[in-house]
Length: 399
Image (cartoon, rainbow, N blue to C red):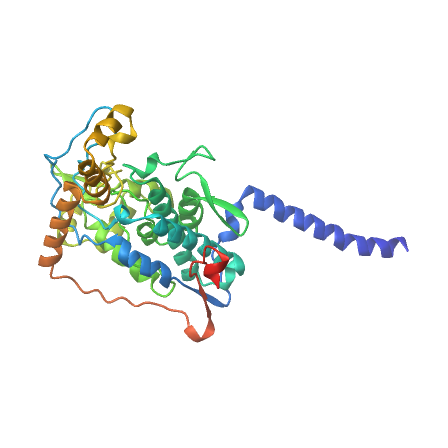
């Protein structure tokens, strides 16, 4: 009887021990649950709603012509107000921009609903029910949606890094802003502990938009599981062949800070691994710079201003700062109202006008290059597509 009881109890004890071990491992490494795996992909995610938004929200500037941005004569600072200068970075006219100045509350709500809907979609099914590429597209779109949403809520803001999540008393990139499969994640968790950790190709660097001018640009379309690799290659070519990626200052080669941040994951044999990676995407101008191949490449001065059409210009009415300014504005009547709402908030600054002129000039004279890429896609008949259409905000809309 005692032996029989022991044979029944032993498996139970082993099961309890195994559960305890799994729980301990989860506590030690909560990101292990996101290691990519897909024995038999069953689902794909339809990111069309995000593409439809990005097509309207992203301002395409065209490929860099390596012409440094000069300091504008219209840059200014007014003491005692929130009027401030625009960016004076040499890179300020490079990279696609998000048109935050056109966003209203309805747009912000839409982004928030998509952001939540994307999490809910992943949480409805097993992580392994998606292919590796579907998983990657999910993380890239989620990261970018969170960044755009948080900047939109804080706009106008000169630098994304200055955003603070008050209830957590944390910086934008460190605050726990999303939850997937019960794990609360920050933007840095997604970047370093999931994407950089589990995807071996350094091309993933170019899929994470951190909202600053100095980083990789944002595409005017969502990442999709079937095309994510080709999309990353496209963004890699833009960034590597821009001054933000590889620059030459006084016959000295400089590389972006993003490569230094990614060094422990992708460029362990520094800088030879980095040069091999950059050479894969370099055009002839960039190849000339890479020929310098310094043993210890210096980094560019990272342009931290917000990648909007204003280059991070934070223009607000001085009436929000002190009573005397408010009174002076009121004395001007309708003239002040039109200036503050149209010219200062809704209109474009001289910085944005310069960006528009330079972008149109680049796009008009560019002949373009054609790259043929083999894109591996999942069998569409073998998977189900999950929609991430943002839910209605109330029951009446849902009906």
